[in-house]
Amino acid sequence: FDSMVGVGVVPSAVSYSALISAYEKCGKWEMALDVLDRMKRAGFGVVVTAYTATISALSRGRQWEKALELFQQIEESLMKEKTTATPSIVTYNATMTALQRGMQWEKALDLFDEMKYKQLPVSIVSYGAAISACARGCQWKHCLQLLSEMQERCIPKNVIIYGAAISCMEKSNRLD
Image (cartoon, rainbow, N blue to C red; front, side, top):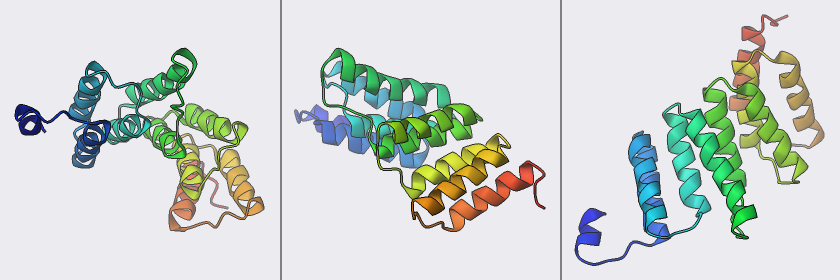
């Protein structure tokens, strides 16, 4: 990336996002955050894909506070700058995952409820993040509600959903 800049090639939002994504996959959240800061200094507004990749990197690094802060920056930019940048479903899912990894089950479920309130299509990944948050918080009743809701919405369950639900029941001492 630096050699690209060194020969005079101006990075685009796509190249910044790709670099952030690469750092996320390597588990280098500090570097991902640094690239996002460089991107902002270069004059790019809120680029949802770059923010989402950074949130994913922060999630892997157990940095839920920073992940939530970036999510909120996307929402704030929508109001302040009159942009069309809105958190995507992937952004919500990544942020919920960061929150559940940080033991912030209530905040994760609040985001899940916000998705439904905004009529965003919740996916199996969204439910997985929400059920995993329930497991972290030993919230077995919420977990059962989410499983029931999946049934009502005809969203198929997979091994990840069942594993998270079993984990939730186990941690809540509800294996009866």
